[in-house]
Image 1 (cartoon, helix red, strand yellow):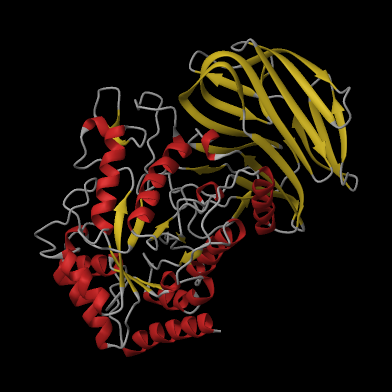
Image 2 (image 1 turned 30 degrees about the vertical axis):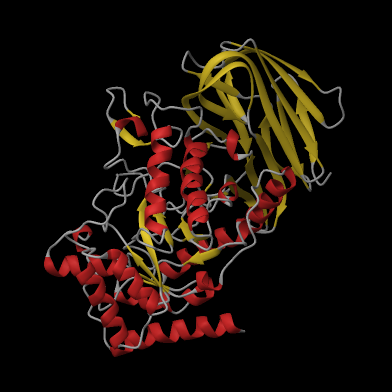
Length: 553
């Protein structure tokens, strides 16, 4: 082994050291709380009879039995817990748990820094080890204190270090069918931490249940290297879904998305941006770009072109002939993606929805037959020659995955597994209707490799105290996450909302090195209301030219 292990059988923890330096003291038991109560251990029996394996059997307050098995392998440590009995899971605590009469006992730690692949801070990538972090399918931009919605979900892996030259990873390894949790938390305390999965009472145990495998892997040279190791662990475990090798050339085409232009027009005319997704405005947007010699290969019609989010028929007041408009784009050699809002139930029957305790809909329920029919109908209409004949989707708002123990739904899936099922319905239907359809999401998690073709880096967050150039640095970090865990996929570099014209220009200079350049503005920015000049259009053309040259070589 590249590390040493010292097991304290009386307190059920193992101290892990490398080169004579203690990294952490890992608790060798867990707590699987239920709706009925906290899972507390009143007795722990530690068995070290098998080489490099420690088994801890607990007397639990809620389960008939609870057994945690930890394996010490040459380059990593793997642990899983199996419970027997009945209960509905709420919080699952790993590398820590409740033990009477001491209360909750976390693992000890000498960690100094933690890296999350979920970009929840405008400009920071690495945080102090005493600050919590969350990877989740839930989040909401605009809600105070919740800015974890950009990658939903990011890969289920935190990286941490006690020394900047060496990083360790905490990876959840499980197939998507076992990802019925909404969030994965790094829970720090002074000189310690534990990890937590949120099941929210939607996983019923009647017999046995085994937690996803948690792998502590050592020897990472950087945080991104830890993510590369994470992907390798998933591949070795056979939990990454296969995908077709097809990657049509047009998927690499330069992108214009109208959302930023809608917002810029809105601030100049004192209007909300959604009603500005009109045929007239998009003709104007593309006309302005063409006048300056800028012709995008892919056009994204953004929020809100449709009359109702769930049914996806054009709003006739905004688009008099969307099918005809798309046909004109095709004739000009361009492709068109339609913005699709995940989870939104506007226009859906209640039987197609997850509902709250009072029976009101809160989101689409992909396990409901009515929802399956609804999504298949909408996707078929948007992509088929008899419908709109669009070329694919920009899928947004996956962060609105419903969360709450009181919510009601049709099937056994919840959290990440239910989000994946919704995207699978969209993706599989799209490929049946139009095999080369492009599906863009912001789900850079290898479990979603079979339901997405391109990862969008998502919106820029603002930090008015940050050093100049922070947008480029942060988007480079996001692109690094995607490259590390899903190198098969293209990257949509996004481009909204830019805090200033200067930050937009700086980011524009490196978009082509991160992925497919995406242009969101046509004549000026929305935040500082800067009106573009000829040199701004020239800068766009320069970036796109470099990108196209790079593709050709």
